[in-house]
Each structure stands twice: as structure tokens, then as C-alpha cells.
Length: 171
Image 1 (cartoon, helix red, strand yellow):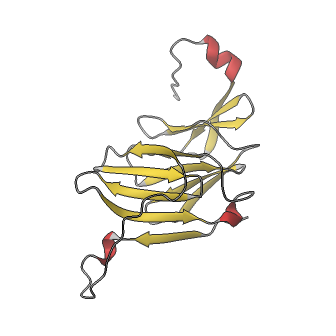
Image 2: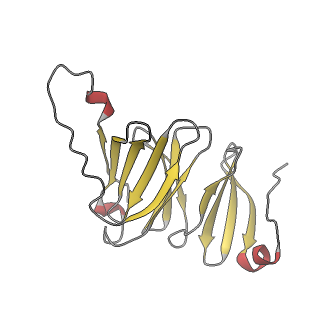
Image 3: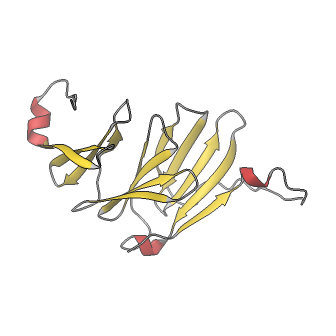
């Protein structure tokens, strides 16, 4: 299924001549993950209902909300949302209650979909932003070369657990 994303860009309304009231209601469901941006002073949080909120750490204000609708998931609630933030781009990876990982830009557009056999409980971008690590299936890890959009390596968790300092050099 294609997800429906609802974007509420609170910051874009600040220059409007029309008076408006912004109510910061935060998450209505349990928050399951939080990531911090190195590029700007933002915190991004996700919850069980599929809502992603961008927060400005300086002003402590909500900047925008992105809502994944329930038709994207099996049942739309009660599932852990995991987030991974690209270190150099306005891009967030989302794993939430389904066998797909979405890459969503900060405007709420889906820019990539990665199919998995179950919900991925491990999602991370490499520090240089060139690779994306994710759980492809039970006990299997995949490393995606972002530039080529292809699998650079696959590992099972048993092998990874035997390695003390796991790192990936994708030369």
C-alpha cells in the first residue's frame, strides 16, 4: 500500500497576516523514539500512532508534524516507531508496524521505500551518510549503499555478535 502522509507545517504559517493559534499538543500516543539533528537544532520524535513531530530545541516549539495514516500499517496503533536521521540531508528513515522502511524528507514526501520481511527493529545511517544499515529479516542485517541504491553487504546477527567493534568499510 502507498502511505498517505499528512503534513502540518506550523512554521510556514508564522509570516501569515491571518492571526492563528498554535496549540502544542505533543504526542497523543506513546512516544517510541527520538532523534537529534546535527544539521540544525531539532529534535524529532515518533509515536505508536504514526505521528512524527519536529521540535526546535532553542524555542522548544513544534515546527511541523507528519502523520502516517493507519492504512499504511496493519492496524495503525500500538506499534513501535523507529527513526533514523541522515547526518547530512533533511531525510528521516521510519520503521513502523509493517514490512517496509520509508525514507521521508522534511516536507513529508516519501523518497524511498525498502521492503523487509518484518518490521525492522534496527535502522541506522552511517556517520558519513553513504550507507544505511537495517534489519532485513529475522537475524539478518543488510547494508545499503545509498548512492547506488544496492545492497553492499549482508550479515547475520550471530556473526555480528562475535565481532567486538563492528564497522563497515564500503570501498
